[in-house]
Length: 47
Image (cartoon, rainbow, N blue to C red):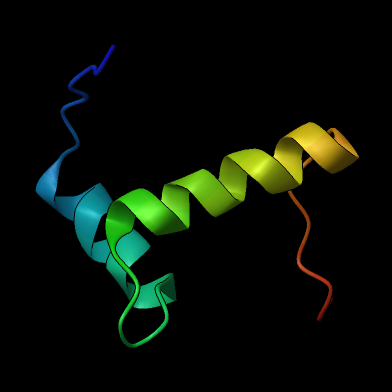
């Protein structure tokens, strides 16, 4: 089953700034969810 989530233009711009060159927003958000599920939190390994 597919669901639609509405994102503000500002949030979309912010998310797109973090996407790899050929990565879609759906792929990027999926990766964020995988990281959260594995680690229980969002982290930036560069910090």
